[in-house]
Length: 97
Image: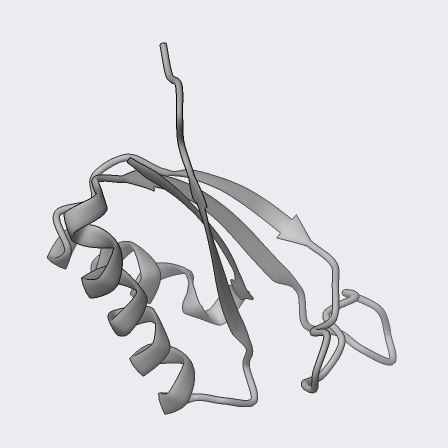
């Protein structure tokens, strides 16, 4: 099992849920409005007058055999709208209850 943390422009939220559904990844925890900026490029997401957009974040835990399909779909979404911003990070899960 792998944990995938996804940070994204709020405009991507519904698309990400649809991608999770298509990849048979049911469970997730979404964090509403969050602030941040990318480490390489992209616009800051501060929810301020100067930088009005906001980001959202999500954790999902998926079986190993679904990780690549999910990451590929997220990458495709990111590349379709590169100015919005989307990143995903994967951690191995060793224990769960």
